[in-house]
Image 1: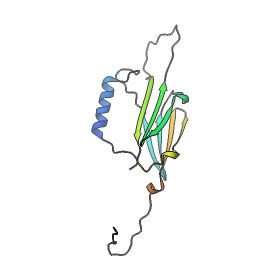
Image 2 (image 1 turned 45 degrees about the horizontal axis):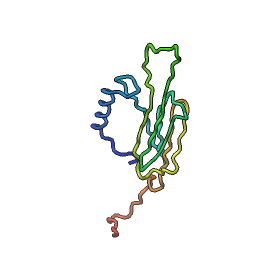
Image 3 (image 1 turned 90 degrees about the horizontal axis):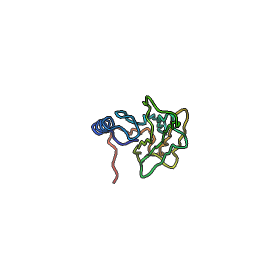
Length: 145
């Protein structure tokens, strides 16, 4: 499997905590989550992460010990004579971490940012690519130690 297993209990707990306490720079009760799609292709996996309004220069993608970390910042400045009346859009710093399997070739990861979507291509090593297993005769195969 490319990513670590998903624990629904931990995910529900994380969502509960985010909804209860919100994020430091966000609106109370709203979570500043980076929505992500994961697409599997032959020989690679693509992550698409929504980062609307983030400045390209504020986006940072790093890998360390099998963990891919995406961080970005979205800020809005108000003029001296401006005072927000309604503020629903979430601002601040965001981070998303994805644990990578050993089969990802971390040296060849690529990222691109276009129209508020960060696309990260995770190429798979040759050993991780699907292959057809040859079926031999009717007898069980001999195992070698």
